[in-house]
Image (cartoon, rainbow, N blue to C red; front, side, top):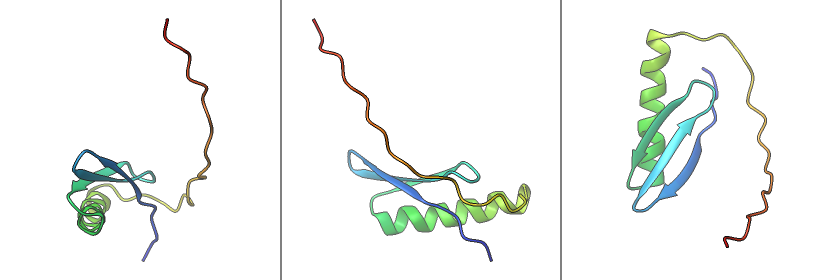
Amino acid sequence: MRTFTALIKKEEDMYIASCPEVSTVSQEKTIEEAVANLKEATKLYLEEFPVGEKGHPILTTFEVTELAKT
């Protein structure tokens, strides 16, 4: 069994879940459903395209100054 990362963001009335290790994506109306779909999508992806152990991505944040519109 391997552990993967799920990144979740809300867009309008849907939650988008993505797995950065293998680039799978899912969406649903609840976080739980989006993650369940992501898990299934990732499982199916790995059956077709097995990947070696790569470790977890590094997660950080950064800021960007918005330019004033003239």
